[in-house]
Length: 232
Image (tube, rainbow, N blue to C red; front, side, top):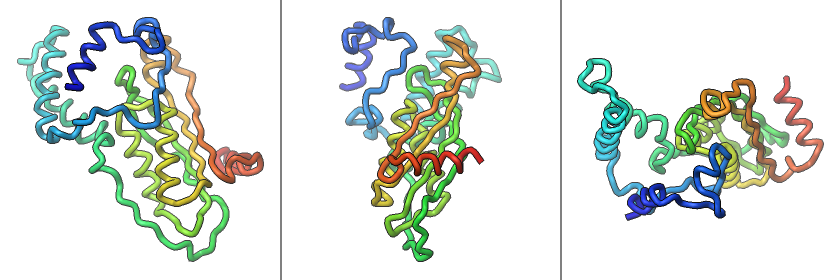
C-alpha cells in the first residue's frame, strides 16, 4: 500500500535530487501545485480516520512519556483527531469544497475588485506547525461576479490542509480562474511561518510574501494600482 511505501521511504533515507531529508533540513520544498495525496486517501470514512488518528496520537504521547491516565491528557488524542479531520485539515476532503454561485455583472463594473486582508490559518507540511497570514485577492469580471464571502471560503478551503505557501497561492488563483472564467486574477499572500519563528532559526520578525498575477495584472500599472489599494 502507499502508506507502507511512504513509511519505508522515511526508514530508508529517501533522497530528493540526491539530497537526503537530513541534508535538506529546514529548506523550503515545493514539489507541485496539487497537494500530494494517496490514491486511496478517501477510502476510509472520516469517523474511522478519527479513531485511527486518536490511536496513533496516543502512541506518540506515550512515547514522549506523557501519562494518558491524567484527567487533563485523557481526552487529548480524540480532541486532536477531531481537530485534524473536522477543522484544520478539512480542506483535504473535496466534499468540503465551498459551493460557489456566480451572478451576472449587471452593474457593468469593469474595474478590478479587491478583497484584502482575508485572515487565514494553515499548517506547514514540513513540520505541521501553523502558518498565519492574510490573503489579498483581486479580479476583473469577464461577465460574472462571485459573492464576496465565497472569496474568503475559497482561501479557507485551500488553507485548511498541510501547505506550502507557494502552492496555496497558486491553488487559490487557479480555482478563481476556473470559477470566474478569466485570466485577470491576482493573489497575494503575506504570512508568518511558525516553523521559522518558534523553532529552527527562531526568527520572529520575518514574513513571507508570495504572489500570482494573471492577465491584466501582468502589467505594471495594474500592479501599481493594486498595491495602492492594499497600502491604504
